[in-house]
Image 1 (cartoon, rainbow, N blue to C red):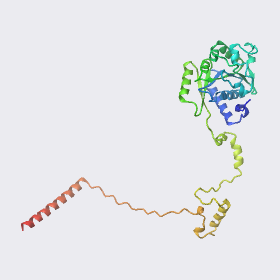
Image 2 (cartoon, rainbow, N blue to C red):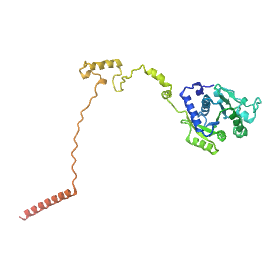
Image 3 (cartoon, helix red, strand yellow):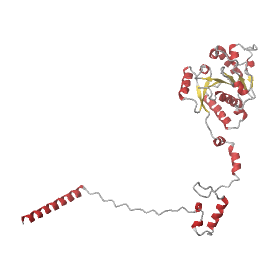
Image 4 (cartoon, rainbow, N blue to C red):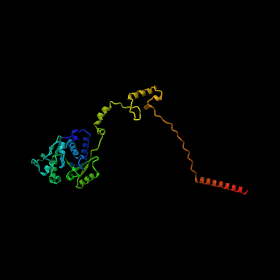
Length: 331
């Protein structure tokens, strides 16, 4: 069993808690009828579809559910590799009736594998057939799901990428709900919309979309609800509440913290009388004197009557000057 099964290898990790949250959301989305079959698909390969399906199956099994995980990607199935089980016989052998050792369809237990996780069983993809899509349309697929529903509480199907092949779209018609896995900076919006339309056009029910591969810093990863607080508090209890941290522009990089504290004590005892002896980092900021210029008083705006009177006054003075000059010329 590989380390990809984080929900089983490290059940107290933040990633495992996210899968438990996803499990709870799926359960609450299907309140009208009990959820028996769930399909997990994606738009393109490499978005984490099989990883999500495997860890989600572990999360349901940890909740006491009897779960069967079917690898319906009969082209490049890798569920057997994740859980470390035999790859054959599997789904393709059951649907086609062709197997290497002549297994019988009536003995369904021969196509299932028991895993290290309690209550979790796996049906691998089996041999690669030449016609995977045609096998999924056959009545044997519907009969298989009906038989498995009698044996378990939940069936999770790891389908194919829906943009490349139609296998997952075919399965979405016969399952109760479907989940689409997308990846950060990888899944295109147009591809996702095309997959959603394809599933809805055939009558499939979409429970939601899983947003995978989101970059998270190590600090944020450790800030979980219950785990990081205990270890971090134990480390921070021995530290002083306040520490002196010089700024970048302060020229005390060559001085230790103790020397700064000693110099501060000298200043408090008035042993340093000259301000030039005080370190630059501990001087009071110099405040330059700011001269404030008084704004000129605003002149009151004149009314139209006052302006008219002023113009008439200037005009009358002009007429008087003209009369005087005319009288002088006559003499």
